[in-house]
Amino acid sequence: MFLRNQVLTSESVGEGHPDKVCDLIADAILDACLEGDPNSRVACEVLATTDTVIVGGEITTNAEIDVEAIVRDTVRKIGYTRKGVGFDAESLSVTNLIDRQSPDIALGVDRDGAGDQGMVFGYATRETPVLMPAPIYWAHELMKRAASVRRKTDLLGPDAKGQISLAYKYGRPHHVDAVVLSHQHSETIAHEDLVDFLKQEIIIPALEPSGLFDKNTRLYINPTGRFVIGGPAGDTGLTGRKIVVDTYGGIAHHGGGAFSGKDPSKVDRSGAYLARWIAVNLVQSGLCTKCEIQLSYAIGVAEPISIAVETFGTGVKSEAELIRIIRRNFDLTPKGMIEALGLRAPIYRRTTNYGHFGKPGLPWERTLALS
Image 1 (cartoon, rainbow, N blue to C red):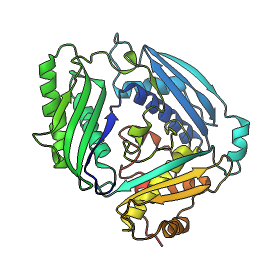
Image 2 (image 1 turned 30 degrees about the horizontal axis):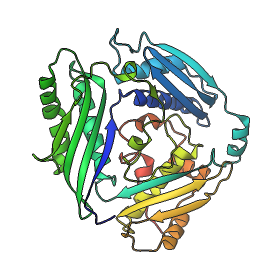
Image 3 (image 1 turned 90 degrees about the horizontal axis):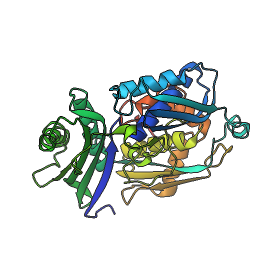
Image 4 (image 1 turned 45 degrees about the vertical axis):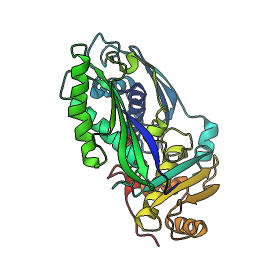
């Protein structure tokens, strides 16, 4: 795999994508709970559709939170403020179906065990300065540029999706083979003008710095020809449906657990952050140039059930030796990872959009001096 010639594709989505609207509401509720009570237990799920947001799940907290106000404020900040389009912050209906956490789940977590069973993966690679796979890194850069541009014009709406197909040669990024960009837009702009605008203002400025974008790159810009109705008015959104966008763009494995709306006792979130932290440090320390970590947990049990390391032929030590290094330098228990990474702080709105990894300043991106 390390020396293959292939084309790999990753996608990213904008802040106004229906699923990301739900993810951000869920993480905003989580942060509000943690701000008032760092020991809050939160498993928040959100559904958004035409003129409606439904919030459910299980929350046990001493914090006083106004769910409806959080929903409206979040939707407003995303940019859904125009009335009469099927989804706007002021007129949408908010239904609150939140209940308390099951005492059966709380029993194991209260003893510092994992909040659920499951496996998680962490990945790091030298392909980019932030140790992320190049296809997902540049897909996120494309969508960040799109968000910046659309906030300065009335021509674009909040909903958008992008996709990067990256050609590899001898296992290294070689060139951007294709770009797909679909962006919600005003009815007032002609399709030809929209295509030129998106190309000149978003695609070229976002991807030229890669050194991988050239005249041979194929562009697919709003290929259906019309994308006026967007967001939850056009497609129902749910939390947890963009798990590949949130992680490594399909380049690495995924354990299947979603992140947004979950407090750090849920190891499918905190464990994935820990696994990324481990992978980053193995790569940064020179023990390998590409690394995937798998950890698995059982509900109510503190120590992981299994640890696996894959370096794709780039490691300078055996898997057994790397596992010994991991155990020596990282506390793999839920309590240990929460404390080491400061996961009871209200940091989660920063993670929701453009991936949970590869963002400087987040605690699981920092490097250690491994012993």
